[in-house]
Each structure stands twice: as C-alpha cells, then as structure tokens.
Image (cartoon, helix red, strand yellow):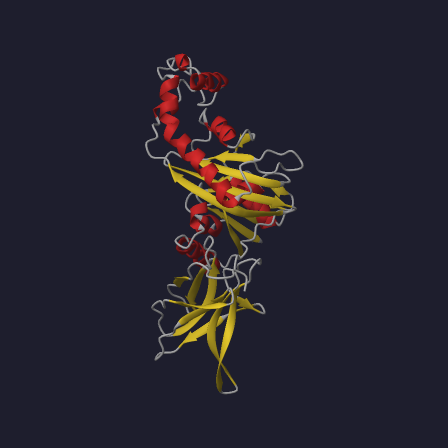
Length: 380
C-alpha cells in the first residue's frame, strides 16, 4: 500500500491499486501507525508543518527519518511541507497556488507553483496573531460559525457601522462588532503575510491564473471556517477566489505524491560538496563528496552508486568541516564528533545551504551541522 500522512493533524490516508481508503486517525505519530498497519508499505510521504523546513526544523525531520528508516525499515520517500501536500491534493493543479493556514495564534501563507505533475514551494511567510478573541466562535445551538446570514451581515457591518450592533447568528448575544474586533489581529496578520509572500517570493500581487480555471487560493487551519476568513483572503489577494480545504487534504495530497501521481521533490537551491581526504594507493589525497546538486532533489541519505556514503573520523584527529558552494570554500564550525564511521545525510534549510547530518554507522545520536547561508554565486 501507499501512505500519505499529515503528521500535525494526525491523519493518514492509504491507498492501493484499487483506490483510496477512508482517512484514518494517526494521533500518535507515523511510527506507531505504520507499525501496526499489517501491510507492506510501498511508498510513504509525510506532510510536515511548513515551519519545520528551516535549519531549526531539521532536528524534527531527522527524528522521523531515524524512526521510520531505522526501527521500521520503511521506504520514506519524502517529507514535504504541509502546504505543498495541500496543493497536491487538488486534481490537476496548475499555475500559482496560495495556501493560507489561519490559526488562533499565527497565520502562515505559502506560495506554490504547479506545472505538469510537479508542485514546488516558492516561499512562505508566517505572522503571529496575538490578541485574537475567540468568544465569537462559540457555536450557538449547533449553528456553524460560517452561515449565509453571518457572512452577509459582517460584510455590511464592515462598511456601515450601524450594523455592528446586530447579531450575526439569530438568538446569539454576540454582535457583529465583537466578531470584527475579535478577528482583527488575525486579519492584520493574514494581510501582512499575503503581502509579504508575494513581495518576497512572487512576481507581484496578482498571480497568473491557472489555465484550467481552478481556484488559486486554499484556506485551512482552525479558523478557516470563520465567517470572515474567505472574504479577508479574497480582499487581500485582489479578488482571487478562495476555498476551504477539507481536514484531510494534506494527507490525501501526500498520498498522491507517494503514488507518483504528483511530484514534489525538495530541490536543492545550491550545489554543495564536503571536502574530505581519501587514501588512494597509500597516498592521502583531497576529494569532494557531493552533498547536493542545484536543481536536483535533496536526498536525506547521501548515496554513491546505491550505497550510503560514509566517512571515518580518526581517534587522534579533530576534523575541520569545509564545504564548497558557489565556487567558494566555506569553513563551518566543527561539531563534537566522536571517533568512528558516519553515514552522511542532508536536510533542506530554506534559502540556506542545508543541514549536514553525521549518522553513526553503528547506531547512536546523529550530529546535525547547519551549513549556513550561501556566499557568492549559488550554483557552483
């Protein structure tokens, strides 16, 4: 079977050649869920929080890698940002997609580009939403937070103050003014994140519409059902239509990636190699070990002809770490490496050179080494 999992939401969707199965809870993580699956796993893709794809988040990705490839010997294909998996859940995605995650404490906006069968992450922005007042989201007599009356009345109250005293939900003591004021910190954060993501990562404030006419904005998160959420997104994006994501969209998108219906490789922004010494015919010679190649997928395990690349750290030698990137050599502060043999791995790190991982060949705690930001040309 193939497995797609949204780790943050604790939801998994599995599928076989006969089709997808009903989403299942995976509240205790991928290790426990897959350990009792009872079926052969042919491909696995994890949708992880977008914030985990920087240098600081590499530690969490490495922990999952160790759990799944070590104890369970499972074929972990990719860890992908949750927003990329959400975009991949759309049937035949094309063009630029804005994925908004609206929560009570923070707002995230990610810009993705879909072309053919590939979804790439262009950039993401996060903003805190401190000060949000949740009282207006209390569901009154089972009514959903978003209703036609609530959306219409709140739109009027925004334009005409006399409607602020009216209740968006009949029989509720909550006024439209209280709803607008309570949502204000989230709205401010959302507008700032949308503006920021287009300014830093897009071509402008009006993305090119996809040729097949699909929606361009996807909205998820615990406040995606707020009666103001979709209207604020539409207004902040200059009128782009927005739709709410289903709760298991990221897991379903991850399943499509696991199956190969959609590709979402973590492409290296830079070519990076590790300077090392090799003994050839009894002579010590310098050598470059390729870690990443610009424009190609970043492998969590560095391989050479199908075998893991290993390096030896001698007892009497405190190694200096030197990488080559952009045609220049960079000295990286050396971590505390014990003598022994290590397998190499790499995690992406936003716009940086990545995070180099030294995994003890005989087991033990890995050592993670952020390689920092690039200097000079970025493709050498």
